[in-house]
Length: 133
Image (cartoon, rainbow, N blue to C red; front, side, top):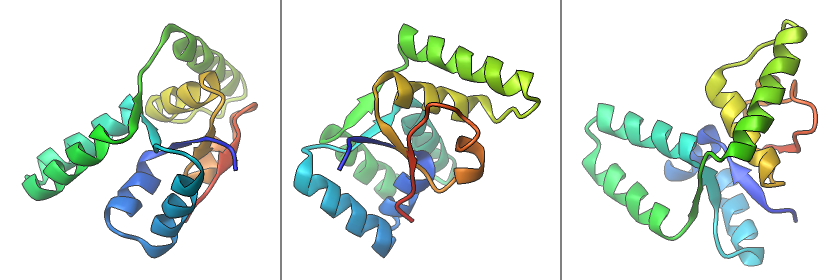
């Protein structure tokens, strides 16, 4: 099993105790110490919980974050993201900038991206992609 970067949709399903996703997290954690997700995913989860004024879920997520890895945007990930953007734009097949940044973080850290949003991410060449849904 390869190390992975968890996308926002999969992390949201985990936080809502989706059985398939929880099972994949358990199996992954049998091999690795931590779950990795991007600072972009962190932002998306935090902003959604704050918008809903979901204080208990926010506290739970912040505790979850303490025990796992939030990967930052780096110069290398931005360079990879810019390459992705250029390639998709030339093909006339752009996706959201947030998804491009998450993909750049995955590629720059040599991680498989775990997302249920296959239709967007499968457009990105060089991105290893999986789905735990």
